[in-house]
Image (tube, rainbow, N blue to C red; front, side, top):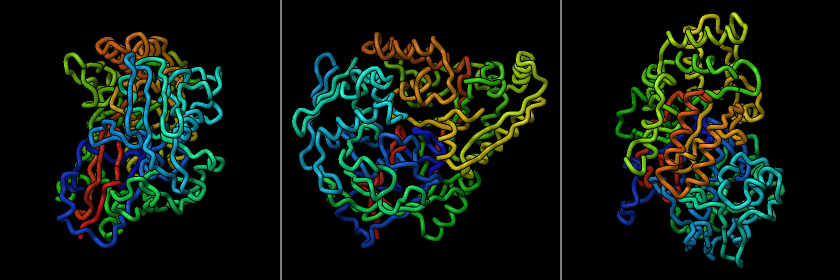
Length: 546
């Protein structure tokens, strides 16, 4: 499995996912009883970026999230269509006003060190995540939990969060407002439990971390580029787990990954560029649409990118169709906005969100208008030319995309020089989060199947908003969707449409393409669940045949 550059959802470019249980990888309806399993149930996968951490309160990149997906488990998990289904939760009761969740937790769940998984483990984990000292980038997931906003902003103690343990195996959650998608939020990694007694050095390497999921990580030291996941014999549903081991290695070059696949050293890879063109119709190739958008974010703390005309010039200078069809060739499609196509439908009309929110003249290639906006920007900035720095990750596919963007901008906008800086993914994220960039190429994949999963990160105070774009109208639209309109599906939808249009019109960010892809899969690898909404690969039910 090859993974590239997006924030979660910091996806790296080659993030893997699809809407269904793929035929090449098996399905739940397969009769394993009539299938001859291989005696050696070990598979090998690759990523294009290193693990940044195993601390689920602090992680922010797809490689790390994928490791957490396989080694931890929360109250809920996602099925192949991105819907939440029970995992550790055995029964959930929701109050009539939609603001109180009473959740019973299974009694037979254990940590890999033998400790029981209890309601207090969830309380501790959630309180730790919203504590400002933790500096989690995913505190927005708790926005609708009672007192979360005040805690994140340092106005209340974390122990005031609306979550408590009713005995050992029952959790009570108080929401500030009804949230129809809250079960999907509880399936996110940041809301998984933590074993408090081992948390001091937790996440810095495999040996200091305990796990409650189907696998446990061994061999990751905090800096190495290979590790393995082994079956967790303390996992409550271990009988369902067929794989004994998953070997991971970092392979930033698609050609390296393909060579390893050809020699039988990898069981699944992502195809890009010429690989996708030549091998995309192979019997072992699997198309994988994904709810993810790659985009340019601009540092608007200071400097030239506070100028809207400059941002519009950049957007209109880019021929996105040429990029996805000639350079990438992996099924990715042109973005019409930040929220992907075929992700959310109008609850009243069934209209696709991306189509309804599209603002003409903001992401359409138009070299003439790009030059006009650029000329206005230079005049307003009092400059005759510009040199800007473009930050990105250093995997090969990202480098190809950056080379294309760099060339298009310089060819279209007279007097513009674009200097690119491609560095390891974790380093790039650290620089971006600290605001040490001018323009950053990054991506976001869905946390759950609702437009708020994308849009909320660009509110003025969201920690994911690294460029610090700010709009009072945008903030108000998001606030209305979460508060006064939260129980009115039609009004809430319109709030989110308005927010997307504000973001697009101002080019707070510049969406480039919706990430899709093609996998090449070992035909003996079956039972892998893929989910297009969250980008999950679930190996809990995977197995190798003879």
